[in-house]
Length: 519
Image (cartoon, rainbow, N blue to C red; front, side, top):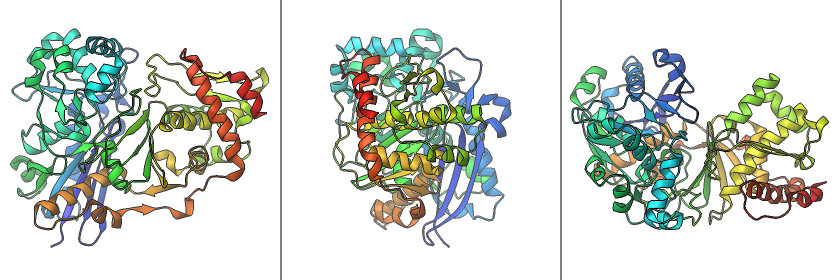
């Protein structure tokens, strides 16, 4: 019998299950649930409950459990021998807060998500309590940001004290799914936990200073942190019986979706950068030593292999692009054609695409900026080029501070299917860029499950050895930086940096002089 391994990705908008055959090096099964379409009772749009206050982004954690059950039922109804699955790993959207009482019931029926911007005041309170941003970065390796979990906990204690007092356990999303799968194991692991801004990824310890600034009693509500490269227990007997798993199936420690996105794109050795193009945009790379950004804009994360994964995240990416397609009734291919008919650099016309609160740079109350457009220049062509370049420039503007020697950029996420996006990233980042085919974080979770199980069962394996046979690069769509575009994009990057700084009140070069150089 072949050894099978499963990966679950519980993301913002959907839940995906991937099963791989480690012996045959095949992907055996893929299925998914779209929350909006397949679980309409939760009344979400893009996986988020509607009708909440501005800046609030929340979902019902029970929706994620229902989705897991649906994909498990689809697996049970398939031809795959789920009883041969040796290990399951869970990838979860990062930073979301789930709270349980001592009976395992939700003390808050909605989870604040990574893109919730309602905790700006709590971020400031925590930062001031520690003596400023520099002191905070020294303490936890990161600044306090609305996306991170510490401010979410503080917000709950300040505004919903009764729910807070009833809480016995705080979880991240993937920890909550692990708790469900194991029938009650409550642990965390370094990868996802390093995005809480409560735990230091360099020292590997909880910050008593930040915890005490929220509540000295918080520590007893936080699970222990165990290694990412170990299993945490067996699948619960009830789930095994209901869906046909073997009771010997173990549950991997799991991690955040970015950690498993790295595994699923082969980003497990130095020199490779993964850029995920989805609801948000992320850029991250495997590193053997931690990187702490003195500005706190590059997230200092651990990965899921015992190493490090510095990560840049921008909140605005697919939102501006998708709205533009809708506004002009464009298909993805039609958008590509429009871009091919317009010049790189857009003759100095630029859009800073902060359509909603932005995470990098940290501008929770952001608004977009249109620069260099005359009254007759708000055309479909100029706006398409402006939106594309604006999103990529915004991603690059933060990324450039990472101390990396980039060998190759690997793209994942829906927009990686666009040639226009692939080429623009290659040109602006000045690196060869190639889409990765496959299932991203869910595949990464399945591969990690295989790696953990092999190492725990007498077959020690290197993570690269396990991952490499499953990574499919789309060589036909590899993009090399266009020599004719490099000069104009170098000027445009300088202009974008100046505009971004000036609008935030920071010293920078004169944007009008820089625009004149673009011609």
